[in-house]
Image 1 (tube, rainbow, N blue to C red):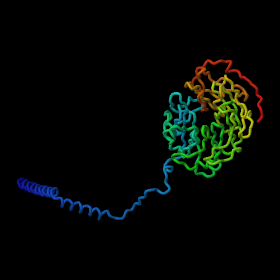
Image 2: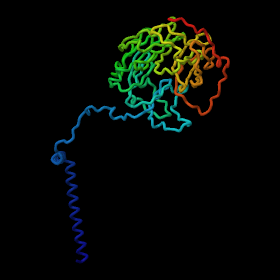
Image 3: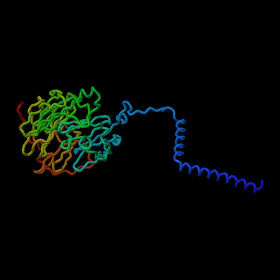
Image 4: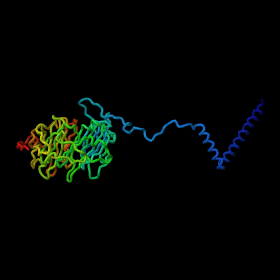
Length: 418
């Protein structure tokens, strides 16, 4: 075939393509100008889709997934929960605290605000419960997995931002419990509470096994009184209460019968005078632990538990510290071992941390030794038992009066039997 014939064939092909494109342009313009035709095309396309894919639905959609809950989506892994003295708490995965060889330098556990320190640390699981008791006698719940997660070096969130407490109320105690749906567990464990006016109340944990967002009444607080402490017991513990006037009482938990949530409790200790009050409660489960007391002027001592004889509930107690103008009133009582540290904070903001092992065990009815030097216008604001830490370097020793720190002042150890 000649070249001229081939060129003619290509021209015919281009003419045909041009005519088809012009027809499509005319058709598209007609669609854009004709609304009824556009609806007709849409209808035809939807009918075609329906005929092709319009079989019966194969999946079944429900609003709720039966018994599925958010707890089922959260692994029950081990976590470390820390609470600072100022009320900041957080949870951290246990894996972040790597295992170290003996003699290591350790790891920083949290960043705290100035004049704040870690007071409580425990290892638990995400599915455990935390109970928060306020000074007005209310209790609030929180699952451990609801506590904000944070790294080792974060300070955490304030408890007031996590639970719905009143503006003029504050958390005074908290408990960590196992599964509150376990009937055997909640029926064989109890909550012991103490108020500043010497009332104690024992309630079965079962009474607190139905959480509410706004909390419930844990104890009825009388006018002029407030909740001071709450401890979890197994029914066979011993209870110790200490007064500002220097007396302490130790009695068996079984002396207090279980009561309902709205009860106000029974007398745990008799106050010495109208201005007297309870300054602390200890639930003793380990008879090998010691009792440590601290006065507002910085004096304190560590005594054997056996030095406090077991009395009946409601008595006046026995002398735990010889109160004088030099010592000031009693401000704290703790059960301690050699593995604990003691943190003492003054109202002026000065803090001192010391190892309990450095305090030797002395008699019950003594004045004790000076734990911290305090100015005349100052006094102790808080005393806390904290986890022992090995310091990398020896802290600078404060100059103290060796006469006060190294000697005991024995006083009349005879006391009237009640």
